[in-house]
Every structure is written in C-alpha cells, then in structure tokens.
Image: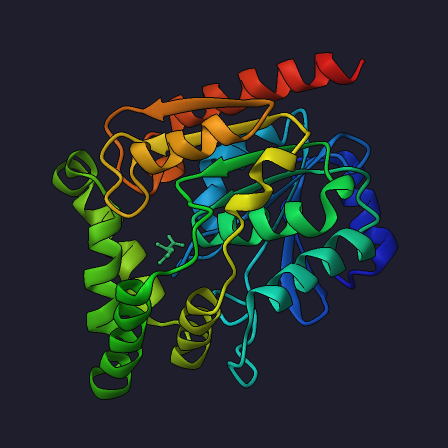
Length: 285
Ligand code: MLT
C-alpha cells in the first residue's frame, strides 16, 4: 500500500493500527486516535520503543500513544554516535513539534527519564503531566562515569553482545529472571543486534548529562513516580527522595519488579498509570 501523510492521518483517526513514520531521522510509532490526549513514551537503555508494548495495548483505547526509538537504538539510525542529553531533548521536541502534539503527557523510563527530567527543566510548559519510571535526577558521579568508560572499552574489545547480556540481566528482578527466561533472552538478543556506535553514543550522553535535582521543586504539573521494589539501578530510596522534592507528585512502588517495571509487572504499572491519568484529567477540568 502507498502510504501518504493523509493515509497516516486517517489510520490514526481510526485508531488501533500501529503506524511508523520518520521524523528528524527518528523512527516514530503511533497507536490510537490522534484526537485523543497524547502520551509520549521514551524508552530506557539499551532498549527500544517495544518496551512499552503492554502499556500501549491498553492505553491506546483512550489515548494517542506516541513512541520513538532514541537516536542510535532500535530502528533509529546511529549516525556518528556523538550524542548529548541536550540532543536527545532536541529530538523529543522535534517529534512533539512535527506531530503537532498539544500538551502531551511525558512518560520516560531510566535514560528516557533523564531525557524527560531535562525536558521538564527546559520546556515544562509543553507538557500536561509527567510519568517518571525507574530513573534518577542526579548526574553520574565519578564511579558511574568510570563504569560507563569501562562499558565502552568492553564493547570495543568484545563487541556488544556480552555487555548487553550482563547489563540487561542486571536490570530485571528475580521473579522475571526465574519465570520469564525466554522473554528475557529475546530482549537480550534484540539489543545485542543494535549498532554498537549508537549504544556507545548513549553511554556518552548519559555520562555527560547534567544534574536536574535542583529543578524538581519547580515542576508544577501532576507527576507520577514509579519504581520496582527490586530496582538495583535506581532503587525506591532514590526515587522517594525525588518524590519528596516534586510538589504535585505521587509515588507507586511496583511489586515483583526490578528496573524494567513496565515489562516486569505491566498489570500494576498500567493500573498506576490509568489511575494517575484519570486524576490528572480531572484536575485539568
Ligand atoms: C536505563 O535503563 O536506561 C539505564 O539503566 C540508565 C543508566 O544506565 O543510567
């Protein structure tokens, strides 16, 4: 089928059909009716937009769900791999602008959360509400920076697969690792095929990001913080500190989950998101 912009528009209006388009060289995927409130989902590292499949499956009935693959990951090309967090926020802005999204809800996990936090610092007025999953506002400390440097060195020496296997395994909690091994292997296998230039570019962007903690008290839109009870990378204690600093925030801890809550316990995450969005909507009325 020959797909034009108006075909994309019509299919979006009908809803229920996942559509892909290229914006500013990024692969952008939409589900649901474009006339509904938009939610823009930003995935973690080293994953792609499909980490939100279980959320979109439910939310697309009522919301226009927009996902994109961060530069260098998934189906978005790596280019030269010279990325900064600022560039990732520019990319997010380009998607919002070109799709003419009106006050979307921003929803980011971990690295997607770093992008969301910096976007809220830079352009909070463009969003109606925020969902921050398994992330932190602090920049990398020296130990963290050295770990990123070691990861880049390891990828250069061994290729991407061994790093992807170790990093991704560490992201998941015990329940998922013991009961969903085939699913975990599929995720690892997929990420191992990403372009190493893109993966290393993301490590550098995270290493160089700024600390957004000082701005948390200035966030004035409804904000939901979600964290897996077994998250080793951004544990509940870290996210609770953020929660106490954001004025209109609520915090939900997710049982039986590590760092990848939307995949590990999608039912509880979906419930938390739906409850939050319903309340946020009522506040807007
Ligand atoms: C992620 O899930 O995006 C990463 O764990 C973030 C990080 O490495 O800091």
